[in-house]
Length: 453
Image (cartoon, rainbow, N blue to C red):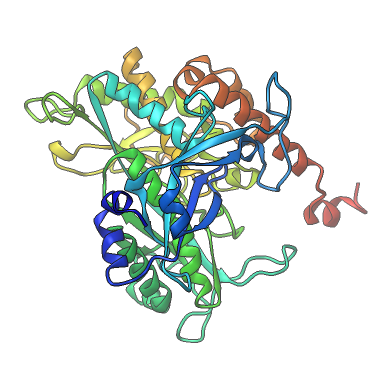
């Protein structure tokens, strides 16, 4: 491996390889669902490789492996993209049998332009819009997921995993340390893998569902945090498989249990002064604070397909099940879709509680920042703070994927921020998935309609 390339490795990757010979490099990129696509190459070849090629059709593929007819005027000829490594993302793949690194790549066309429907490029585009205004967006994602028993038959319901006590994981044990201890061996591997990859976990807690956990990450740069969530999903799955269970990031894997969210905390730093844009000189809330909330209230309904990308996603929005049903905002109120947590004035932030854990982290964060950006640029005002139980109110965002896609297709402002070509391709791919789902007859329909209607 060339000396030039090793000089670009982050410190955790260097530490992982110290005294060892690197065998393989996984060259990866996120597709629209957030699946890692790419190639595994010998380390000696990667040392000589400045880029590699994949067809752009990976961004036209649905979650089922079907294809959306999204290629545009040139037709479906599957031209190659040029994928170039971002060496700052090099990290270990510690579950492999040999010494392997993963490196996230960025996608470009033959002229060197960023591929507009690559999720990482979409997020970079939104972050640059902030930077052009002299603002630095800061995010902190929270990841919820379930550890469940192996499920080899899709026709059977998801069941809780078996804990170390020999009993199935129990529900309604939020914040229980005993419940966390039940998954101790899996959590130990999660910590070990994260340490090897150089990721800092801010905390792990038991959530309300049986086998449901939450991992909090420290705040930081949106692209870097999206990279970490992208990596974490694979890391957690690999840790679970070592202990004969599955990790699932479905928004609603168990019908009568809470769903899994990816709550996103946002703050904005003025790059010239270093001050939080949401906090004034005397520590009070600024016009920008209210405009950001107003942007979320006005524009999140237009980006719901990015925050809730599958038909299952909308099953999560159920009253009294720890998920919002509307976009009311409140201070220290977990029933609202937009929450302002308790904090010091310097750490004032706004939490989006709408995003599901099934979203692509690049696209979920991009969508949330895009809504807030439009609020800031248009000086949109937040509605009056909601006090009390927001579940007593009405829903105010789309509740089906088809309705959500219609709202996104009509949102010209959002298309300008995220990129019109990305929005076009994303809508086509998601409509293809939705139509395929509508062609499937469910057990509920057979049970209740077959002989009764």
